[in-house]
Length: 211
Image (cartoon, rainbow, N blue to C red):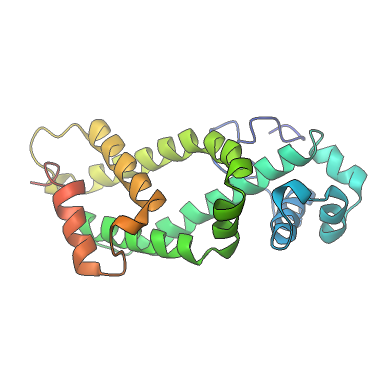
């Protein structure tokens, strides 16, 4: 990885976290965490780089050393880290589920809960959607690709449960599309009702995929 975070805001391997491999005391990690802290009581348009640097215990010149493109590069990196942590945490939360249906059911329920409980995200989506959208649009294809790859791996691991002739790559992309759709618009389903979510997973997500 180059020293400065580039305009793409993503790691060379296409990962969500542009700072992957850097420890918590690395200046870049400190700056992106300070950015999220400052956004707790500041609008995206009002984000002060001087305040971010001070909150991180660093100078403004240090901030520009690592993020020479300024505010947008810093926001892009901070949001990439935040989204990466969301998916990593979600994958860890469902890892103990022993069946494909159970893992997808728990993943949807836990994912919706985490999104709804994320007060900063809710504020940004509800009050600053126009400014947030360009950053999320950049992350969306990366999220889709990584989620589809994760699901393809799951289908391989649970291959004995699949219907004969299932195209796993096509199925993983289909599942990724539905999962992201439900996480983005959860109001259509009561995701606190495990029986209902399990039925949704069994009939709509895995119908035609499971034997």
